[in-house]
Length: 500
Ligand code: BES
Ligand code: ZN
Ligand code: ZN
Image (cartoon, rainbow, N blue to C red; front, side, top):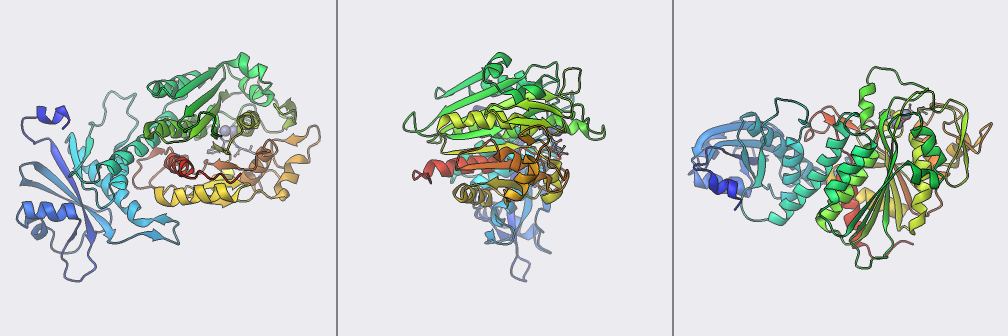
């Protein structure tokens, strides 16, 4: 029992969130979860009586005060139909999504009432319930004097506490990515990003963090990355994380690479000012992969993971890349920088070359790479470009469970031709038909720096932020698809038979 709880004289500060299914029968009787049933018995059927009438719709709530002395406020929230499972059209588990949404809505209502503690009905899936609670309550409050009241969600009842804890860890992982993405670019500079991650990993003895300075990047001959970084007064960092959770220290690692542009102004190919502030989240790739490793460490996943994040700003200045400049990547390929706003692929070119040093089981990179990805899929799913059906299957199956979906995109030679037909260099950093298939030409560009047979590029530009599409995330930077990457890593740690 946590001590804050015994310290409380009464339980006036406790709320309870209970799910209720939309009745399948016509009698209008509420279909309780087992926690709801138990609570209804505790209050001698009063809850059932109060809920008669039209059934609560999915995500809609009713609040009751004074039903029971232990829970002065009870929020009942609609879970949708009972027995919802995998929806083949939607490519996700609808039951889990319903629970995440219902719990998030219920917990926020408790927060609005300024009740500091809430117990949550596991609704038959304590992991999903915990995710809903912890994701739903998260908000970036850091820099405001007036903050939302802190609510700590707890599992109601004693069953499923392991699953609950797992859900808390998954959601906190995504919240870490959201925090880093939402924070202003003058707070999360390359060095601050690296130090924040280092601090999160400090407690784990099986994690080593290297914060590589500019001199190291130069020695590595990462000319493409450096060409972007030199436009800014803020020095670049190459963050390298080694998580050794595998049984054998030199087990082939899973290597994650994340685009870490802490602010993307576009450089000399300057972006329009409207909405430019959102480009503080252009380190979303780095944020999601580093948060995934923090989460893997918290879960003590039995595999080795390496995380690589090239971190810099993309700024216009007298030292910045100019359209038409040619730079040399780590593998010797020359790149014509036809648009300085296509900078993410320059960082990733070098980081992907470096990723080949580790005899990886798989290389997975994430990047807020193209506005075209947002045009293609919006925020419904992360676009996955991969040369490996084995990798694809693992990512896809992970995403069905997490509800943070992926969708496979093509890596056709068709697009490769459009980036390798270049006047001055081996590759151009934009496709020659400029906007057509922009997400695909960007992926084709990255492929020029990959020889590994299990590589996936995740374009997360479309899922970078949330308005109200994902009901269990508030408006703001989304931290997607961190939970899918965690679930994916967990699956790889189970899959001892590498596809190699
Ligand atoms: N960081 C942007 C992509 C982006 C746009 C992410 C909107 C999230 C939301 C990237 O560096 C970029 O500017 N890409 C250009 C590429 C183009 C110049 C070929 C784009 O998408 O316009
Ligand atoms: Zn850009
Ligand atoms: Zn960018």
